[in-house]
Image (cartoon, rainbow, N blue to C red; front, side):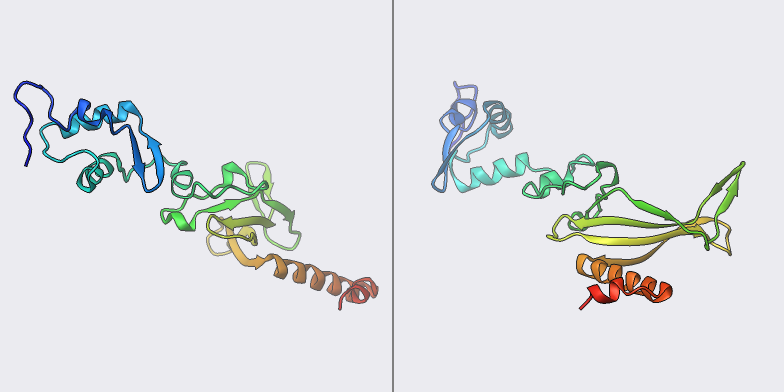
Length: 198
């Protein structure tokens, strides 16, 4: 085992010892390390007998640099740098899950006021019951889906609550759209949707 030289003031694994390690090979790819990071790591490794460039040195470096604490809002960029929010995603609606793989991009919600559902009166206003539609996509998914929800007054608690009605794939949403139009055609005795659906 090597020990620091008595007159150097810095061990053989100190700042001088790692200057030549600023440019090193990782597999077949040369990488240049930040000198400031090297200096901090050198100070951390002063007095160690581990030689630069060895697997044990790399283990110490990675342990020194690693962290398990990330700022909220940076988790997905850190863990999934190759994934990007779809163009329709609303930054204010992003759901960063405690299980990062379950995080969800969300669009703005489109609401349709419901005339046969109970609203809520408050301070001279009426909050209307509504049907909400929102596009969503998980950060590890390749296809969005449609979330349909209903917001209205709970008759038992008199609170205004949101109920998630269904999660529809894009194909299911198209099928539902045709079914709704078909029901409208039947109700109004018009053949437009019947003629347009296989």
